Length: 275
Ligand SMILES: Nc1ncnc2c1ncn2[C@@H]1O[C@H](COP(=O)(O)OP(=O)(O)OP(=O)(O)O)[C@@H](O)[C@H]1O
Image 1 (spheres, rainbow, N blue to C red):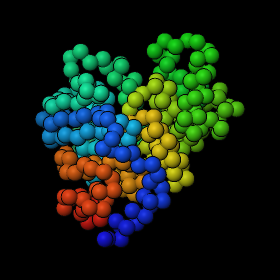
Image 2: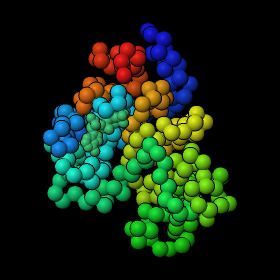
Image 3: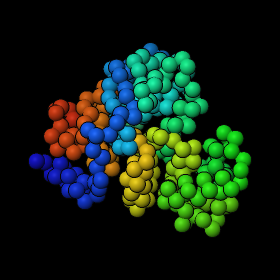
Image 4: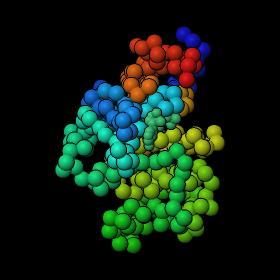
């Protein structure tokens, strides 16, 4: 076993608490034969995979291999880019999210997103959290107060900000801002959380907080995370997908991907031979 394998496995046995039993969990997101184009450029080729409910799926692979593109297909964020085209099907709880009668507003509520760079609105901490519920018409102050406390607690930020909810979100540190963005995503009661390199701009302590948070959140939510950091994928995820040049090379339980990958390309990537 290579040194990198054994290091990753050691980290996993220390921190990989409560791995979801993938064979018992039901399917939350099901992707079948997806191809995707930006204009004439094909970015994804024949992707099929299933993501289990209340599990963490990590997408890894070298820069430009299509991880973020694929993540954004799961809540139709790529629809915002002109000239894109998709074939194949993506289902959430069995319903095709690209069908003509799919409700986009409902989809984006059910599938929340957290970006690489935290992007709080230039508003108070309180207003950031309740942005989504307010937009969908919630006006009741007691309800909004309840949501703020609940979501900030879920995002492990409440204790740090409870005395300054009316302060600007921009006064928070980078790690706190990212947890605020997670709280904001949780406030619309999503079922799936998409995270595009949520910790890549953070220091090691804040990164550890986000990883702990992911571990807590998966008890309630299905989480899909794009990460460049293989140790992070090994620490937080139940299943790992390795992408290369727009293709899904291998997808399986994280421990298997990192210990006994079936494909040579996966092995080369995780042992650092390329990428
Ligand atoms: N808006 C866009 N228009 C055209 N091409 C794009 C667009 N976004 C991404 N691409 C292309 O699609 C391919 C996949 O990009 P994507 O950002 O999904 O890769 P990635 O694996 O997430 O990369 P990274 O790890 O560097 O973020 C790349 O060739 C990229 O240039």
